[in-house]
Amino acid sequence: MRMPTAIVTGSGGLIGSEAVRHFAALGYDVVGIDNDMRSRFFGPHASTAPTTSRLVADLGDAFTPLVADIRDADTIREIVATHRSTLELVVHAAAQPSHDWAFDNAQTDFAINANGTLNLLESVRHEQPDATFVHLSTNKVYGDQPNALPVTETPTRLELPADHRYFGGIDTSMPLDRSMHSIFGVSKAAADLMVQEYGRQFQMPTVCFRGGCLTGPAHAGTKLHGFLSYLMRCTITGEAYTIIGYDGKQVRDNIHSADVVRAMELFHRAPTAGAVYNLGGGRENSVSVLEAIELCEAISGKGLSRTTVPTPRAGDHRWYVTDLTELRRDYPTFRPTIGVGQILQEIHDVNRDAWERTPSDVGRAA
Image (tube, rainbow, N blue to C red; front, side):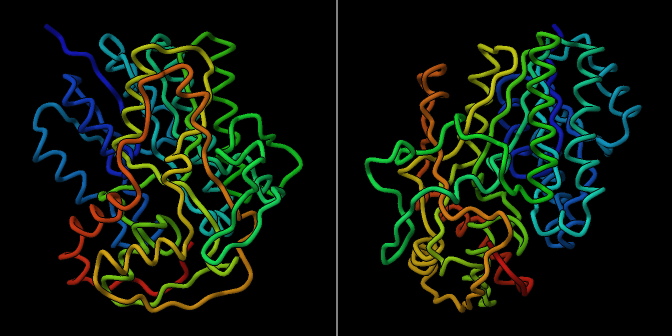
């Protein structure tokens, strides 16, 4: 009996590797596409190669890693064509993920995030259009629209009034236009809209999950990407952490990579065409930078050395919490199962020994 195939791009990254393990455990033959661009974005310490090696060792024949670039349309088409007879699922988690990096590398950022996504969509449309296409989008498609929200300041965080329509979180009714997105936000918005369009134009089962802070113990946090992971890394190593803007009171909701992949599975079991959902930890898993620092210090037993830059990054959100109502309306069993405190504890426990041996890079963090 031939097993179903899942193709996972960015298979060595946080969400990609979680998806590889999850769907391999469900009986899929998983084909991973990863060329370790992350090490070129952020340096050797951010390489995905060790994660790929662990996947090979742990999963054996259930996982086939391929070194390929999603910008190479012919190679991507060939990979999809090779597996079209058993292909049931494509998880597109490969991306250039950093605002800061994109600012000085706009063409590469757009080629990876937008054109790479288009290459995958075209390949799946022509070779196996019935395969579920899951795209990891981002809440940065909303640009700085959330910064127009009437937040007030508390001792540890910025907060919305309890009677505001978005107090429970932001849903997909938030507009994308008339805002500053960052170069990264634009490339991801282009990909997001194209995934929706292929779903609607060609009746392909596609979904965009507009993620907030996706995290977990496998996150290779760096100064340009990976808020909670990098924060815990600095706490453990003793390197200084720089808070950028808002006095550290900016708020994010956080979701564990295992919960992200659970949402993928639920959609794959009952897919629709051109779906889009905001995906995050929700209000109960929201935390400010100051609150996250307090948690890191309590978990590690170490104090964090930190400085503050008063000017925030262009387009950076003051407050963003995800409303999960739309996702739970269509998939009622979904809810985040791992809280932010447990997430940070896992990040600490899994990475402490390695981080104590390897100093953190010095620089700015989210």
